[in-house]
Amino acid sequence: QVQLVESGGGLVQAGGSLRLSCAASGSIGSISALRWYRQAPGNQRELVASITSAPTTNYADSVKGRFTISRDNAKNTVYLQMNSLKPEDTGVYYCNADVREVRSRWSQAYWGQGAQVTVSS
Image 1 (cartoon, one colour):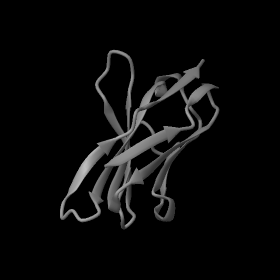
Image 2 (cartoon, rainbow, N blue to C red):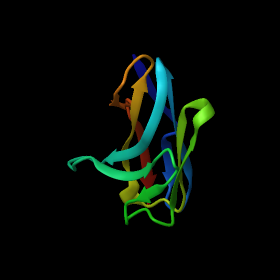
Image 3 (tube, rainbow, N blue to C red):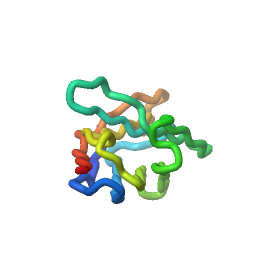
Image 4 (tube, one colour):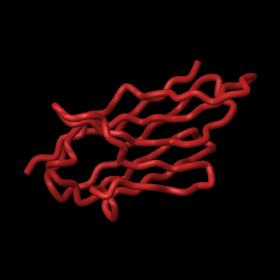
């Protein structure tokens, strides 16, 4: 079994910064893609950023130039550095990972429990 635990959420004023972390633990053979999603009240969950094992990165247009996704493979951890935060960035942020467990031939997706980010105006 694999667990993803997020940390680093909180309350920040507009223009401020936060860094989210998501650490994977358990029976991990390898992790390919890692992603951050967010969900604002009343909205669908949306993809914010992703990073592959290459690594290559992709971002939603709304966060390009402000957010940076990175990974530390030795720690099985993915980060989301969020700068110049706006009130519309408010939501619950979830990490998502494609993990191949030890002794498994295939990967499956795992989700973290979510971290609240609130940006005040």
